Image (cartoon, rainbow, N blue to C red; front, side):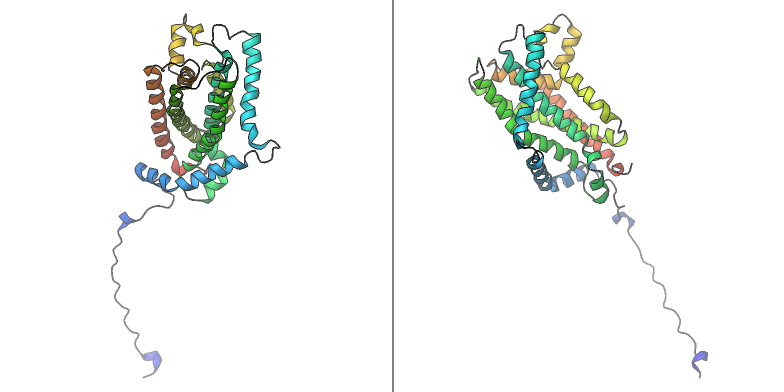
Length: 295
């Protein structure tokens, strides 16, 4: 029999294959919130080493290098001391106004820098977001950690100036309360930074409004004037006392300048705002995880 007349072999029977679609995940899909937090924890070493490297290289081009981390708030302090302390005389009724001003300005600069860095972290790293797969919250967390590391010499310098500049304060046990206050302040900075990072990733125009909002926040935090001036304005005084930045500044001033235990209301307000903003910020940022870098 010729090959052309040979019958082709019957094809093998097609066997059905069952595929469990539940085991498949879409590439780039947003994980569950708890899984997202686990992923962030897995990236903790990268976040820390990246933040430390950026702190070390941030002022490498400057001749004075890291000294500018201290010089910037010092020059700001001198400017505000001349304008508000001497010319406008807002120092009236404030014991150790120089120390009062130093605490306010140094702690304000810490919050302003951390919130601004966190808010702009997605936009300033857009190429990284588009090229790699990782939990995007690592960027604002890293930006805030970078500011925390940079704030360590800042806080030490603040305390040193308070001790050496007249009238000169004495180190006491209440100074230890500075550390939990700064931890709560850092958590608040991170929470607000996460919220603004998502907002700015969608509406970049907000970056132009951010400096004005931060400046208004400073004026509303009793950085260079006494809150006693608002006693005749109870509504403004209530708003001031609810301000988390004012609370942390007031706590540190009580501890290092006036050697008195801060009121529990200040701690309660600061803790509520810090933990609340962190939880809200993480959840709000996580909800937009799939959209970062696509605009």
